[in-house]
Image (cartoon, rainbow, N blue to C red; front, side, top):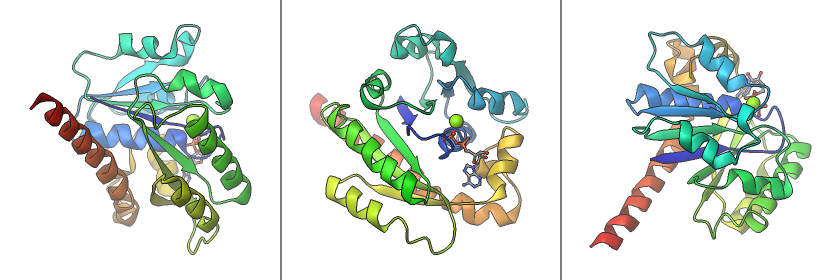
Length: 229
Ligand SMILES: Nc1ncnc2c1ncn2[C@@H]1O[C@H](COP(=O)(O)OP(=O)(O)O)[C@@H](O)[C@H]1O
Ligand SMILES: [Mg+2]
């Protein structure tokens, strides 16, 4: 089972877009997929409610209603036993020690970052918190950054890239700013379910992210095999 958390304290950076796109792609690939929404705004669950019965099914867990409970036990109890991929959509404003609530029983964190100096500055602080307070390395959690809503020739990320390189946090891919995402979201679809040929270049921009996620699985499996043999 893979458990992927999409997290950044900033609102509007693309957490829900990334969480729903991942869930749709996994479901289309035949994985038994759960989408867990911790955001009181409930955007992921609204997206799922728009999704046609004819599309590959995704199990939705409206987790924010149960935040009084321990964050992990809430969803662990509510995903079907055969679940292979869990994608968790976090709310905005998770900072400092609050991140600890979200780090139990997850494998991977994806951090979407918008191309503005304010967002990049906030993201560097946030990643610092994850590494220091969250101790994600010690917990064996992989962290990767995805640039979102990128317009052509964006050089603004170079400072972030240097910061990430110094921390050995990978910068995985850049996702374009396009209305395809807005249209897909309104229909409960992922970008990979859009048949418009103009969305092809956007679909391709996700390949490095899926490769990174699957390769980590391969690494994890290797470790398990080594332990067993
Ligand atoms: N790559 C993109 N291109 C165009 N619009 C986007 C893109 N990513 C997100 N959006 C839009 O930006 C808004 C905020 O994105 P969302 O995924 O809801 O962010 P968050 O969950 O972090 O608050 C939404 O209206 C969404 O459709
Ligand atoms: Mg959201």
